[in-house]
Amino acid sequence: MDKIENIDEKIAKVEQMLKDEKEIRSAKELESKKEKAFMDKPELENRKSSFAEVAEAMKEKRTVTLSGTGMVNTVRELVKLMTPKTEILNKVRYFYGANKNTVVPVWGTAASRPAPVAEGGTITASNGNLGAKTLVPVAYATSFKVSQETLDLSAVDFEAELQGILADAYADAIAYQIFNGNGSNGQFVGLANAASINEIHFAGETQTLADLANLALTLSDKTDAGVIFMKPTEYAKFVADTSDAHKVYREDLIRNKTIEGVPVFVTSYAPDGSSFAADFSNYAVAVAGELRITPKENAGELAVTYDADMYLAGAPVIEGNFYVLKAGA
Image (cartoon, rainbow, N blue to C red):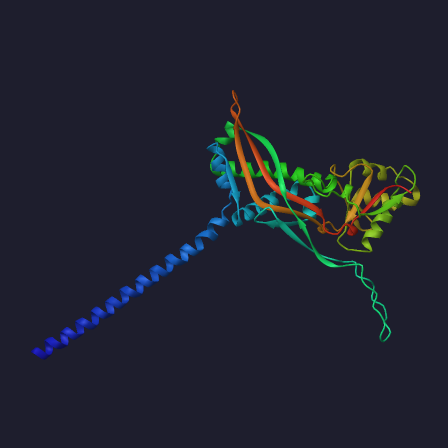
């Protein structure tokens, strides 16, 4: 009888040990899941648009400042909305930084043509170099008024509305600066003011389609990804060239917006009297991942004015990769 009881006790102990082991294993699995959930939480939060936080702060009429890695993702989303606003924003390259100092790496492209060298001879030095250009973004600020009716929208609706408002405002600023920035006081180095851009001149007061074709051929000899940007008034001058010798060029320009196979884009942001040609991915726009929005009450109005600032900079990476057709000798 004692032996049977001892066997039963041993069985009970083994069962208890197995039960304890199972509970320990379950506890470890639960802890592992908790740790994984904790590790995944920042990633999931970053996937959420930070505009939700901005929208909530605006609805509560309080100042909000977003920065850091999560904000970089938000800026990327804003740029995605921004680029369809005007074609030039689809062509340039964007560089993002979590702070106000964004370094854009630049590879020199002006290596000398290889030539034969006699034994013991000297290799001709290249004019090109490998280096880096540093773009330091500065604050670009704007004010916009939001009606109380808009503030009363649902969180999702208002978040989408806010993205559209900021995308419109900064798309306008960036597109203008790419062509017209004077390179001082925080402005971009605009193509109209770039010091080392290649100039192709036409004779006389009137540009002809032959001049535009020359610009296109010069560009297409360098790259297959080149395009031309010009102001509507410049486009009108080329279309007005009705000489028989340029008939094919004129028809292609009007029908297909191309000349010698190079796409032509018309934009009001381009300055008067010039047409710019390049692979515009050689133009760098630095966007720092910082955005601040500050509310200001409007007495007697069912609306709130908001001041927004975001850090931007822009410049041609290598100015010699750009061409401009303009009047001159």
